[in-house]
Length: 329
Image (cartoon, rainbow, N blue to C red):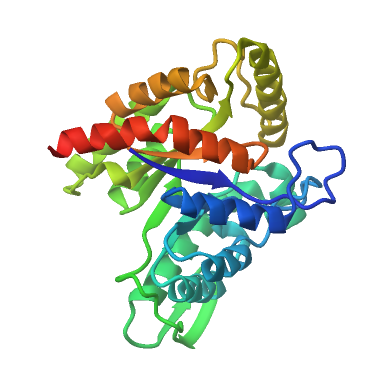
């Protein structure tokens, strides 16, 4: 099992949020993650929240490319309906070049109505805008000659995207998906799959099975590294810490639910999505995911705590390194 990170920095402008992180603190957090052998970072992109979330994810990742050497750097996700696809293709290819081929391009349609409203784009247009944008980006990265495009939303005449990405034919494409339809589309259209932090263990296992089955139907060779699952990390070491962890989980799920106008856990105590508990409890929860075909877990730490990273690396990760060694033997 491989472990990475999911999330992003927060600016100090987010007054009143206990988990607020400045950009410099976050950069140090990622550098420590690399030293601890975490595999990847997938960074969010959000706008207009008033909570200091990352808006320019490619810019921050480009800076991190210069501050790291091994950890993979991904987006989770660039919301394509909001962006000029040729400019995004250029920026993403530049990031792949600067990181020496460490970039993972996660994309999505977007879901927060307030963000669509802010950009004056009707949410009903999200699918068509996404489809046109990803087709242009793929063509921009694979065309050996100049090309023109005249579609419903975008027009380009005699363009060439430079530089070419280091990874060929292009950086891995990741799609954030949850519904059966979107998961099957990811499998058919050559995307890797990003699964969210709120889905239960049972839901995650079901979604991995859907993706794997659709890959088979599409004639696509499936590999476990094609799926990454976000999981909130709340490690405790004494029972006295458990109620505080539950309170944090309630607050985090409440904020997410408010922003996406929906998802809430009915009972935090019964919610098995987060990695919440002692190291042994977290290992047991990860074993359930592993048995269901999950081999890449992205940790979401509401505090972006270096201490939590070190504790996880020391007390949880060795159990999976050992199991991998035994399997190889």
